[in-house]
Image (cartoon, rainbow, N blue to C red; front, side, top):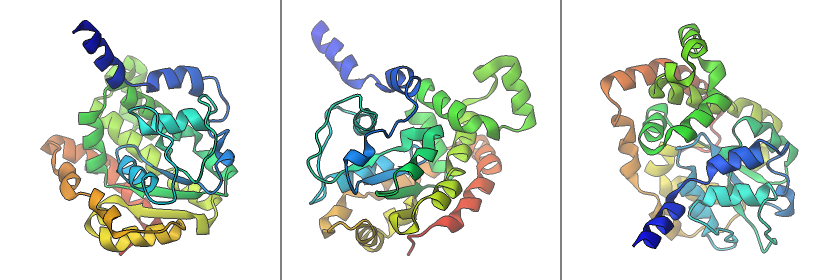
Length: 268
């Protein structure tokens, strides 16, 4: 029984703190091996935006190679692309790369791949961060991408009390702003014919129309059964915030979200 409990902890514990200290904290580049996997599809955007779902659908499509070796697909990708886990190329790949965070300028150094950016409404994303993440993941994203988005009052609170001075709801909202604000620069510096920007809720509602178009854009054969993996239940997440939480998210995030919506390149 003790061995089973120990194994369960090992399987469910997050590998990302170790990645932060041993890889992100020591390597100048996180995509050092990307070009060893030609014509890859990179699925990115703000964390908790449906990127895992989409990356899994693409990876399991005909013509794509499976590289997964643990319970965390994105960490598998991060470890391979950083050169920390050996992997011999065996076909075409789809990698989820939301973990890049502040290292997003690396995308422009690898223009020979397809980049799919998934945008999602802030209420759903923040709700998912609050109720699915422990503090490490939230704090890492906030410090990497959200810190500079704080208003004056929160900056003062942060200087006085550190992370404890900023409620989790506001850390998540600022992190969202910082992440989605990267889109304009990424789009400006990446080949337009190789980049697709879509909105998650619209993809879910119009999957029979938009998913085939996405596959055409990334030069991958489409089958109708792929759309079956996209389910509408997650659309309710935006209604899960309390009234006060929803008010704060709307005040902090709506301008940033509205600012990037015109960047969409795949719509109904």
